[in-house]
Length: 263
Image (cartoon, rainbow, N blue to C red; front, side, top):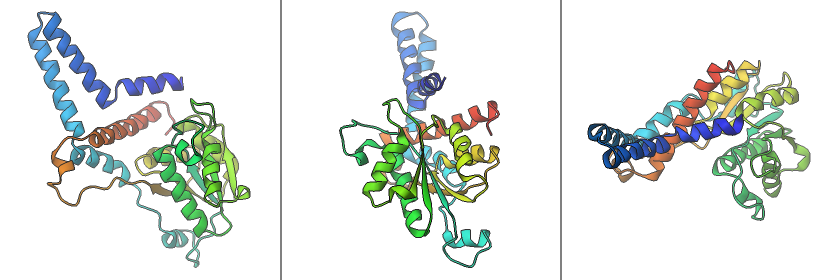
């Protein structure tokens, strides 16, 4: 089911959809007499690809997700918990894995994805600021056969985190699974949730559905250009397409979770 969902999501992603429509348009123009239909399809595909490739547009759409939860402030967190100490007594820091990539023969830090690396770095930063806290790394077996949480823990260990301060949750296979397994570990304790800024709205809703109310610590925010007329705003880029695909993936994930009653 997970594999089917990933295939369908990839099939209808902005880039794939644009190329699919373009292909149908070219077929109509060259192999059929439906010239008008072909021209319409090619035009639609061109507009879709152009709009998605402008970082100034796709990035702003992504920001509608990222802006929902600001970066964590430990002083404000202390106030929320009713504590005077600037460093609140949070015991758990939950880091959601963001995928593993590359060859297993490569160094561990090169085996984890860009998103996993950003999330792990934020988790370790908070772990070092909060004495006595422990990292819960959650992520099950991916397509390469190795648990994501295990790979993340090896990177964390190389960066100075003690094994005794890490708990690995290796059963979760999808975003919806994380709250189910984390709940058994943290129970009713307050905890910090670390994931990518664009992914945080869906993660928070999924955790809330399971009766958990974590403190969000988003990582890896998209940084817009200071100047409106910068090259990345007025010229199409591959980065713009990537931002559009992230937005599509998250809004699609929110819609799917809502339809499934998960949020």
